[in-house]
Every structure is written in C-alpha cells, then in structure tokens.
Amino acid sequence: MKKMTRIFGILLLCLALVGAMSMVFSAEEATDVAAASEEAAEYASSFYNTFLALLPPIIAIGLALITKEVYSSLFIGILSGGILYAISADGFSFETMFNAVLKDGLLNNLADDYNMGILIFLVVLGIIVVMMNRAGGSRSYGEWASKRIKSNKGAQASTFGLGVLIFVDDYFNCLTVGSVMRPLTDKQRISRAKLAYLIDATAAPVCIIAPISSWAAAVSGTVTGSSGVEVNGLELFIRTIPYNLYALLTLAMVLFVAFSGKDFGPMRKHELRARINGDLTSGIDSGESEEEEKSNAKGKVIDLVLPVVILIVFCVVGMLYTGGFFSGTGIIDAFAGCDASYGLALGSLGALLINVVYFLCRRVLSFKESMAAIPEGFKQMVPAILILTFAWGLKGMTGLLGADVYVAELVKSATALQILLPAILFIVAVFLAFATGTSWGTFGILIPIVTGVFEADLANITESAGSLPTLMVICISACLAGAVCGDHCSPISDTTIMSSTGAKCDHVTHVSTQLPYAMTVASVCLVGYLISGFIQNVWVVLGVSMVLLFAILFVVTKIANRNNAAEEAALRKELQE
Image (cartoon, rainbow, N blue to C red; front, side, top):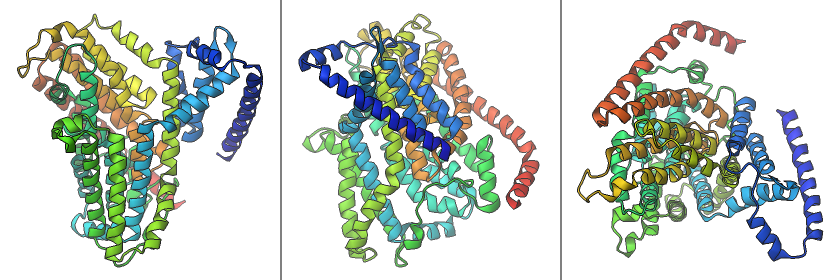
C-alpha cells in the first residue's frame, strides 16, 4: 500500500509538472481569447458517443475492487477520461486533458451549487454527530437501547425500522441512521459491513417508493419536463411504486437477512469475526475517532433523540421552503419542486444553531467544546468529501465523452421490442448507474426516452385515474429500479459512499460485501420485468418475484450453512494464531 501511494504521488507530481508546462506554452501561443473560446466550444473528442465513453468508470471501479484503494482508483479513472477526451482528429493535447481533468472534472463540480449544498450538509451533520457524542447522548442511547433490545436480530430490525421512517432523503437517511444505530449494533456485535448494508438497503430503496421525498420530486420533475404532452408526474410516480421490484424486493431481503440471521458471500466472514471476538471491522481501520471516551457522564438519551428530531424537522422545513410552501404552494407540490441540496444545507445549519443553544442550556457542553466540535466534525467527513469529489469528477468525464448520448441511442434502437423493453431498460439502467454512480442522472436520461416512445399513447389519455399506459408505467418503474440497483452496487455512488461513512465502515469492504446481496435481488428483478412485458398485472409480477427471491435465498443460505461449523472452526483457529 505504501509503495502504491508513493507511485501515485510521483505520477501526480509528474502530471502536474507536464500540465503546467503545457499551459505555459499554450499561453504564449494564444493571441485571441475569443477565438480560443469558440474553438473550445467546437471541440469534439474522437471517443465522444462511443462505448469507450464508459471506460473511465469501468477502470475506476475495477481498480477499486482489485486494489481495495478507492482514492487513487477514482483519480486514475478521471485521468483516463481526460486522456480519452484529449484525443481528437488533430491528435492529443495535454492542455485539453488537464483542462478536462481539473476544470471540467473537479473544479466545476466543486463550484456547483447542488454539490456544494451536499458538502455543507455533510460537514454540518458531522459536527452535530460529534456534539451528540461528546454530550454523552450516543453513549446513553446505547446503554438505554441495550437494556431493551437484547438480541442481534432486534438491533438489525431496529436499524431497518429507523431507515424506513427517515424516507425524506437518502443522504439524510444514511448519515442519521448510521450515527444513531451504530452504538447499538456495536454492542450486539453486528459488523460494520452489515450495518452499512442495512443503511444502504433502506436509503434509496425507501426514498424511491416514498411519494413525499426528494426522489419523488426528482422523478416527477423529470417526467413533467420530458414530453410535449402534459403528464402528472406525481401520479405517474405513485403508479410506478408497485412495479418498482428492486426497491420492494430489497426491503424484503433485508427483513429476511435480519430475522433469519443467515448471511452468505463475504458478509458471512465479517459477521463471524464480529460474533466470535467482537472484531467489527475485520481488522481494517475505519478511521473512527474515539469520541466515546470524551463523552459527558451527565449525558442522557434526550441528548441524542432531540438533536436528531430537530435536524429532521429543520431539514423537512428547509426542503418545503425551497419548494415554495411558505409562499402558498401545496405540500405535495412543494416537495415536488424543492431543491433538496439547498433545503438540506439550510435545514442542517438551522438545526446546528438550535442544537448549540440546547447543549449550552443542558450544560453538557460548553461553548468552547461546541466550537471545538466544528473542526472535528469536518475531519470526520473528509474521507466522504474526497470520495464524493472524485466521484463527481468521474461523472464529469463521462459527460464530456457523451456516455449519456451513447446509452440514449442504444436504448432507442431497442424500442421496437416493446415486450422486452422493461427488461432491456432495467439492464441498461443498472449498467449506466453502476458506471456513473448516479441514479438521478440515470433515470434523467432514460425516462424522457420512455415517454418519447409512448408519446402517441400519452396524447390520447384522459385525466381519469388509471389512464396512463400500463406498459409505460412498467418501463419507467424498470428505469427507476435499475437506477437504484446500479447506484446500490457502484463504489462511486453518492449513497454507497454515505452508507459506508454513516456506518464507519471501510468503503471497499462495504461494496464487496453488499454486491452479492444486491445482485441476487437484481437477477430476480430481471425475471420479473421479463414477465411484466407479457403479463401486465402487478400482483402476478410482484408475487412471482417475491416467491422466486425467497426460494433463491433459501437455497443459497442452505448451501452456505453446510460449511458453517468448518468455517467457524477455521476462523477461530486463525484468530487464535
């Protein structure tokens, strides 16, 4: 690892020097800024709108899974995208490559209002978590919960329940559930990898079937603006819920795993280590600071519960405010038109101010201690911020290379097979979301294509309930399900990063342990969408999919449990040595 870090540092330094030299030479040759801008606007990469546009994320994801090191893998992915973008009919340009990597890939994404709002929310949430820990709220809650929830299954079920309750936004869900439930799951010897999976599996899958959430707003806005025909976006979103197989089956799988206690794949080893000797991270440094040791002995459960409630209320109010609720807009329309990033940033900052006053009044934190929590909270979020920044940069590279255009044309070429269209859309959405790490961007690309295919049918609909074409509803559900699935599996997904951050779990460990679970559900969903093209009945499609999922889980866990005693004995021997 040290050798790889050294090589990476040398490579970065060399590239920086080459880039600086190329920019100096280009500055000397440039005589007309306007002409240069016009030339840049007309620039086209030789790999634009080709399969190679998807190569940068494939490289980054592959390296992350092989090397177990996410930062250099993401940067190399960004760099490869810059290299591909800099190759044109005129040859290769170092200046174009460095402009693409630094300006378009990193700086523009960091300057983006939406992204900056998410980073502010991350930092503020980190500060609030540190304050709750130092006030003794987390310790008290852990002690209180351990007296009432005395089983491993109960702790997992409680994590699932809290994840379902916080359905407003997936970012908020991941970090809040992680900070609240981690003390309890630690006491019940649930591995951090398992906690990260429970968080991730009840974040986006819950938000994508909740009519009042930032996800519902995003989908509704995409539908409304994607066709010349006026469509009620929220009505269409609600109709997609029963056909959103990945979200529903993922929640069913979480309940199965929580109550059966049966795990498989890499997760099994992590759970065994946690149960046998309390090694929650399997020996991997999670980067967690020892906040529990600094906690105030006077802290009570209310010092965790009330700050979280304040945070939830303020974030919801912030989202409603950005949607115009306080200007007379209805609550549904306010959520549909809200700016989730600005709302979360605004709400979290308001909650931070109120919580500082609350802790001062409770006398569990002094003003100096509250202010000291600010840099500490920021430090705890640095890994997530770095990964998010690189992930956004990688998405910028795929945009410059026209990956979205390539996928859109690929899907349009398959629209003649309308019976197979749900399954095709699901596969394409999974691949696109996995490669780009964004579910919102994925369904933002695919939903306009679907509504375009069914535009003639939409022109003839009435405003009565149930008037929307059923196959169109199924196809949009397949887009949403595939987007969530690919996002769930991707190492560069925002939600995946947030989940590992909330659970204090090594990011690559979270990805590798979650992948077999997600792919099991995805394979069942594919069968379900194949059936839905022929039988457009939600009860048949959902019923067959549920039965198939539990049948597969029964077989897989039975096979995995055959070697249970041998694996446990071998692990005990390994730990003793």
